[in-house]
Image 1 (tube, rainbow, N blue to C red):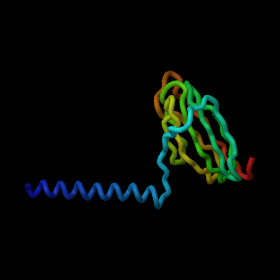
Image 2: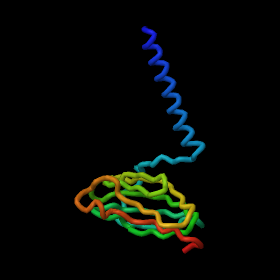
Image 3: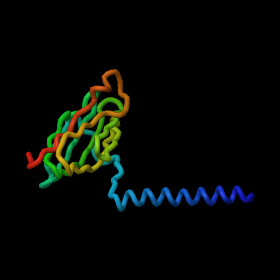
Image 4: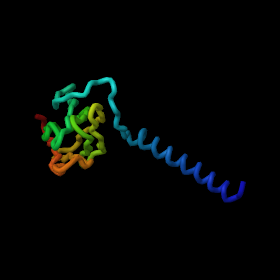
Length: 149
């Protein structure tokens, strides 16, 4: 084996170790969750928001051409939301500004992530996957309020 080939293999191995370390650091030290596809639950057809604890909620969100339902969600500051997203027609994207949330809404599947809203304000969410002529209307907002609902 040539010296340059050995160097390329060593550098490649070192980069793999660095990338794996970065992923482990993000997962453990920064507590970053990876979105999950739920397989043991039937896709739902209507949106639902309900409280599951003092500061915890479950939101089942439905994407359909060309809207998310619900389009506005009001929650108190400090709320943790178990977010389940599905689609009734085609593939849509789902991204919440200023939060590490980026899901795909896929027909027949449910994607899940947990998100916490620690500061008050309006946080827009939108479809980031081109889904047709009125794609630009697929947006909504989380309104996070001080002092509860």
